[in-house]
Amino acid sequence: MKEFYLNSPNNNLKSNITNTILLNSDSLSYHKTLDEYSSTPLYSLKNLSKKLGIKEIYIKDESERFGLNAFKGLGASFAIHKLLLQNPNISTFCTATDGNHGRAVAWAAAKHKKKSVIFVPKETSKERIDAISYYGAEVIQLNMNYEDSCKYASKTSDKNNWQLVQDTSWENYEEIPAYIMSGYITHLREMENNLNNSNIPNIDIIFLQAGVGSWPASCIWYYINRYKKKRPKIILVEPDNSSGILQSFTLNKRITPSGNTGTIMAGLNCGIPSKSGWEIIKNGCDAVLAISDDYAKEAMRILFFPIKDDKRIISGESGAAGLAGLMKCLDSKKYDDLNEHIGLDSSSRVLVFSTEGDTDKKSFNSIINQK
Image 1 (cartoon, rainbow, N blue to C red):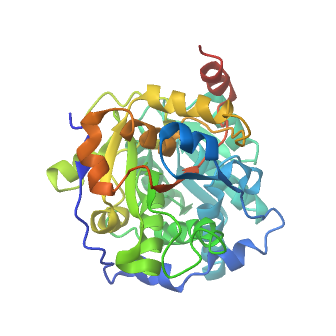
Image 2: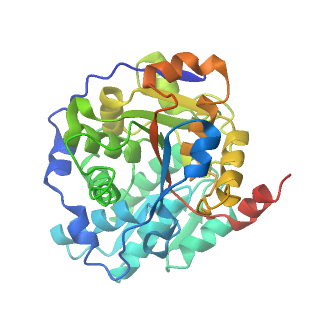
């Protein structure tokens, strides 16, 4: 199976419902009204950048977002806010999740004193289930993978007149995922006083973990909309056992990934890419890279045991995947073509996101304590 795919994007954004909602949403203003809101920190890891042989590594730490230990609260809270403006009488919100999104939906629903029903796939750990239940959600574990769990949540929501808040889109289900994507724009706008503060960004390359595609698509949309052809190069990173976007690029159509789907990167263990996310990714992604669990573990340990006075960052299995992708690119000459395509060299300024903290503490501690 291919390890990477080089794309030649046209940097165009199609005129459709997703683009319209993204253009007309101001999630940052909404999030600033929340008591839990504060901008998450952005760190420069100067000693790690020296070790890896590049100019700068910046990392935005989303583990502090809303007390949820992950960035997903940005999307769920904004979508539920918009839905309740349209219909204040919604009683129950529903979603399928492999962890962080479901926790975010449960939290946001509880803030509005609404019920939530969260379906989780068969691989979901007890700790992730307990974290969702903490906010009063009814959590139901299915003997299904993530993709089938999404289908089940959709059908069950229709049957019970619940409001589905799913972070992936398909035919005739694009408005709510677009609100979720709009919510993610907040943490990009938070950097407009530093990395994103001019007509030319102060970074050259961004590594984004892919998942089902909605979050990286929102990031791509932001950079195309703000900088057009002057945007940074953008590389998506996926587990090699769950590489739906890489395989979709290879076949030039959205597909459910083949493979054993066994990966520690639970938040990236997804099925067919989001319909609206895929359209943006095709037009604005420069490359896709698959990584092994070993790279994710190494990145977690590097962040937890920093070099000299670099900031210690607690980053979970999916959270460290962006940095893991950068590390893989710099690990072997067999990636020279990829590095040349994205312009990765000793002068590069790179941005990565730690999208989650230790959301599964047992797994996290086991990995950190490995020799």
